[in-house]
Length: 157
Image 1 (tube, rainbow, N blue to C red):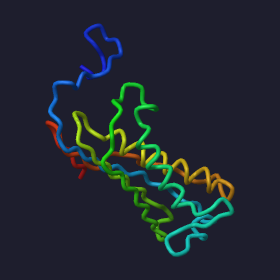
Image 2 (cartoon, rainbow, N blue to C red):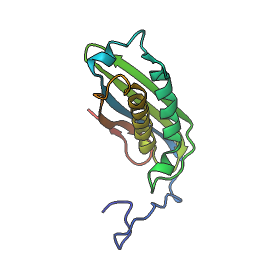
Image 3 (tube, rainbow, N blue to C red):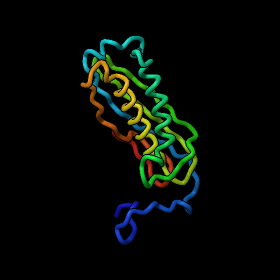
Image 4 (cartoon, rainbow, N blue to C red):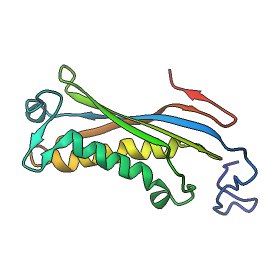
């Protein structure tokens, strides 16, 4: 049974009131494929445009997205984040960037959705700023890499 459905299969927020407060972390990634004309603009680990530095803006947007996850995903609990770090790793040889979002909190529920939202919002912001160069940008492979805390841990291979 899905945790967000009650006994009558209706959507329901999970009651986490009885769970202990523990340290929770999550690491999510989003991979963005760059068309050649956009990859050619990559200099010193950044792409500068008339709208400003793409990576810096995407990082700020990703942090904002992670902080607002409960406003975007209907049954997510609002969480106070202790930390949210976004790192963008360009790979010119592959013609792609990998956006890493690592989130931490001390709470009763995990931060997987915050990490995935942060990575995704950063990728969407990158697309929005770079689409003037090319609409051939592909956001792919958004996934959870790792989570810790609570009753279960997860690490992708």
